[in-house]
Image (cartoon, rainbow, N blue to C red; front, side, top):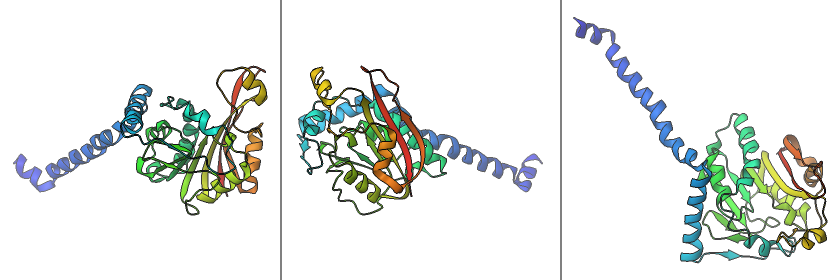
Length: 268
């Protein structure tokens, strides 16, 4: 009787379907999310980047550089080659967090967003983006220095990408190495789609480049023309800026401290 009832009202079939649906809704996301969640662990991300760095740089010897156009500050490549051991690139998360939050807030699937990472230097920023929901195959890196198949060699002042190629662009502590910042900004606005997001961060402090050099810390200010505020960054893009979603202006730091200028905005 019970078996007949189950067969008659379809409850057994429904139970099997709900069990199958539960497996799809629970187990499948676990496998999909696992790599992303592991990459959020700084040590694991560093280890992955370190292994790949040793493989590509020391074994395959694929490290390459270019001087770029005359818009690149002359100390850029030399200074950044000394910083290649920063493989986890924790600093880039300060831009990726608000960028991912805003992109997801627009009800878009981050995995389908095409992202341009300008000046990532190492793969750390690439995997930081993956850890926060962006798909690896949709992330393109561009730098004057590269060893990675994930990072193309090139100059942000003269990019070879077609117009409107990307949904988002990240320029983490990069545009301060430009002597032609307006040209770099125009190129970013060209390759990002209308309505796309741009995230920019730069280091800022009260000391002049000469004072920084006198400290003999090894840090070299990129361009003599320094951006003093978030408003100055936005001014580079002029009326291309639609809406500002996030900004941080460390203008209240002391004379000996170093702060950051961070902004995430949408293009018209």
